[in-house]
Image (cartoon, rainbow, N blue to C red):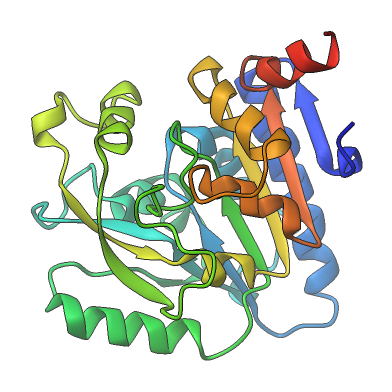
Length: 253
């Protein structure tokens, strides 16, 4: 039996799941903005976040001027303004719709210098909220199994993407073919993500069900980086039924 079931929410479909997560994030922000002048949030960029970000972008309750936004990873090698850039995704789905203060990874800069710049921004204060997902290979941000380090000393780093991760980008409809998916990216490391006070994890679709099962029921291991989420004091999961089906099969066994 899972010992953190109070944080697991399973809903009927992708849209409802994302809306439920969006409402939870909104509620968290409303509590924080009562006592904080600045609320620092890291956002993932992926189709799993669509409905959640849509809900947040329409919120009339959030004081967006208090929000300082970051994103957690970015491809290296795409042309400036490419729609596949995660900064482009977040601009389209949230940043252009609300008056927040945004900090994005700029891979058009010299990469080592950009890592220093972004690291310094992240270290200016605590991260209050992290909105994230789980990859088909169990990755968090672009920390694929072969580069995942639960004790990483770095805040931000360059990684090589594994084949499963690159295939997922095609499955998600972000790229036409495997060959067009960049091989390298900049990512926030796992300890950086776990330093967020409140985590909201949205995972959708049957292709993620094995990763969800491994993350929640298998021993802690970098073979499924998302397993580390079970150690966090406040990680709230939002799954649609398709993503949760692997665990349901265990519960019904």
